[in-house]
Length: 545
Image (cartoon, rainbow, N blue to C red; front, side):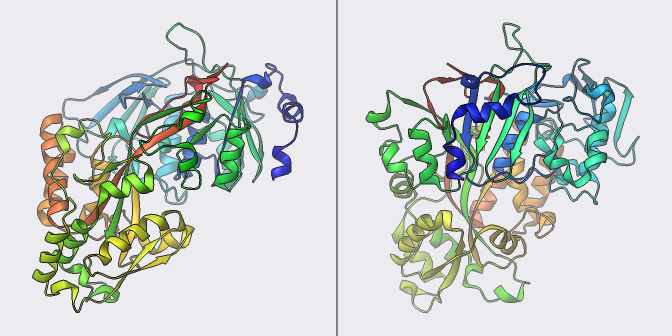
């Protein structure tokens, strides 16, 4: 792997030029980054993790998109209208959007996108045989209407029918699961479409050597322009490497072999970032940092289901103990020493800083107060922690330092928790299938609406089928959640959201730890690198000087 990275640039661009008849890429205009965790698929129907989503957004488009302030903007749909009762969305599509060229189209030329292509793409995600993890985005569709809830009245008019009004639906449609794909290519490649992607995006696939590199080239027929009318993208291509070791990735960045890094890993944070959360002065003349609130809440979850035999007598079912755990943790110190102040202590609810109208959502959360924590333990029947049995805190290795910090904080109030490290699919399976008494987790927004966070505590979303991993159940919470979904008025809806977040805190259903920060660090020759609270990068706006 490392030898491949040391090849001279002319070898890479000999590959890029092969078979490219539309234009000649300029090797100085290729942007490079590393994806340490690899990319499992380029099929938007299966793009559930961040590395896949980041690549997929370069290759595909949807009806709508978000700008860096999380405002909903037109994309393939140039406008849309919502019916008075809030259940019918009518989209008017552009007529100048084409799929990437493919031998599976007539004369090998990409054909025009129509409303029927969106119906095909949406039904594919909804189809149980597809087994898309994104099928939930269409849960509110009224499948009794038209073609399972969708109707193409002509090539540029698409209607979507909902069961009940859903004020967050337009935001949901910006999700990568809603990107349009061509039926000819999907039907031909079937399950292998993820390695033979054809979309409408600013870039198209040129080369994918699994575990080594992924190369995307500029789509010369891309439909979007900048404010001056110049066609996007500015770059000739993107080259993605797959070096797993984060320290090696950092050295690649320092040497100029990649152009930017996403996030700051513990292995190099102190070398690059000072305790104020800024680039160290010795690097300021070479690099710049982009940072903004990130819609990611890091938290500890409890398994609250009394009906699960394994946890029937868990001390964590005691509200006072959960409150004591919340008050034992010094979140400010945690952010300062473990994150170099890149983050915000989670002293409000579950919904993170960075959410639009966050100030309307803010509810009073837990603060560090060890004396109160000790009093709560006494209330729970365990004065000074006496008699309280140890419990397990499950985590992945990436967050071992965080969990060791929490373990140390709990020891101060005589609570013993033993850390158990489980990684990858095994860790996710144990959370989803209710096998963990207490676990570290994070929730990254799929779309910028608090409902995306609050749905984790709706009782009808119990795991393993849903995302309510704690099995929190509260009738008043469920009623508020159902009412909020139908509430169109923004201020009224946020009031309901705030009440729901307050109930989560009142029940100490989780331990909010910190609200994250989206960080990109780039060489100064890279311009137009986007940063937003979803931590996505639209490289169609980037340029290299």
